[in-house]
Amino acid sequence: MTVRDWLLDSDPAIRWQVLRDLAHAPDVEITAERQKIAQQGWGARLLALQEDGQWAGGACFPGEYQRQAGERGQPWTSTLPTLQLLWEFGIDPASDRVRHAVEQVREHCCWEHAGQPFFSGEVEPCINGRTVALGVYFGQNVEEIVARLLHEQLEDGGWNCEAENGSVRSSFDTTINVLEGLWAYEQAQGGPAECTAARKRGEEYLLERRLFRRKSTGAVVDPGWLQFSFPVRWRYDVLRALDYFRSTGEKPDPRMQEAIALLRGKQQPDGRWLLENTHPGQAPFTLEDGDGLPSRWNTLRALRVLDWCARSSA
Image (cartoon, rainbow, N blue to C red; front, side, top):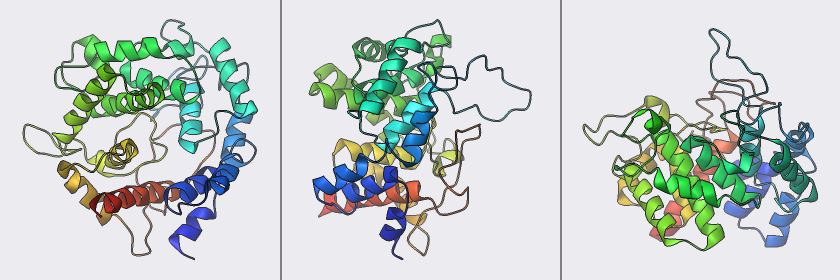
């Protein structure tokens, strides 16, 4: 079995992206596969878990959630991580079932911070960046959140959820979430100049640091960023950053070369990539076989990044 056949022997959420990004199949074939996500497999399972307009009774955390002593990670069963998964699956936002689910979120789900409506966002830019991406994807108005994010950009070009506590240094984790949101908004709105300028400054923050190194010393900021995860949740890693830059359609910047070499070096002899760093916390169900084993999600994303690199240099 080839790597592509192995990828296609999976859930519709993966299959349709393989057809689009690797096989370059006809649009009618891609669309037919994508439409299955809301009706079968992981996407349908997630949609079926919605109750009272939200998932697990909360926006960012399950209703009445209290962290237990010694608990690792956080639960990933609430509305935000669930919608993020559906977005990453590429579920068709025009599907009647999806439209109804999103309408229920808009009408009934509020943030734990101060009861703000879900698609109005809250105060942390890492949350608001993801909410922008989700709002754009699912056809909701997120202009106020975008305006807030543009105002909150730090002097070094990125963003940090700790800025409200006095931090003046950006965070890789926060910045990647905001960049994904701003790029989604630009695509939907035709590229507002202020938004584009802010996004480019945010990209420069990552590029100046070669996607994983300190600007001051060149040291690796966090060894965990060199391990690839899925689902990514709110966390940064090199593969997530590369896949973001691929999505913009720009040619790879020369400062990405070390990160691209790292990606190539992680390919296994059989052509696949491993799941390396599952973020701990309760999940609705598992999508992979576990850390240290071949990962369809990481393999799909790695191959499309390398395909982007090859096409850009042709």
